[in-house]
Image 1: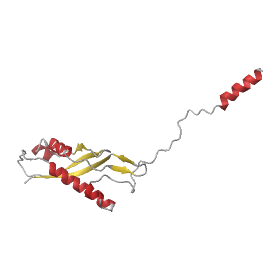
Image 2: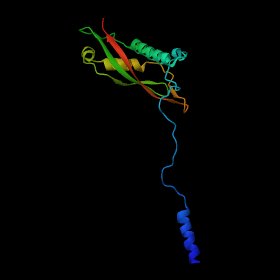
Image 3: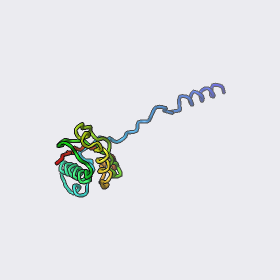
Image 4: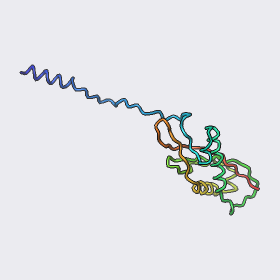
Amino acid sequence: MKIIKIFLLIFLIFGCNNNTKSSDITIPSIKWSKNDEPPSIKLCDELNNDLERVSCFKNKLITLISGNLNFSKTRVNKELNDTLFVSILIEKNGKISLLNISDNFNIKMEIPLIDTIISNAISRLPYILPATKTNIGVQVSSKFELPLIIKSD
């Protein structure tokens, strides 16, 4: 009887296939592929070529931001013709938020509130169509860096 109990105990110890290692779950790739849909605006979404669609989107976004900039109370002492790079996040729900504005000494000396002016302009942008990962079928956030030319008259 002792032999049977020992045999059962050994069988339970070695027969239990409880793997304490992490399971091998394959997560779909999240790299950007040519089949994925970049963020877009309805006007640009109608274009068939992906490069044209992305170019249209960036140009339209720069136009919208520039149109929302309010320099009505801003006076400059010297002529400006410089570029700021604006990093924005397009969230998976289509909301646009400001991540970063590059430092430009000349612009910040002449327009100290430039960050606030740009932030207000971006906050007034409409919601857009977010990027979509087609291999997993979900909308994702995406980041863009756009050049914004500041030119005084």
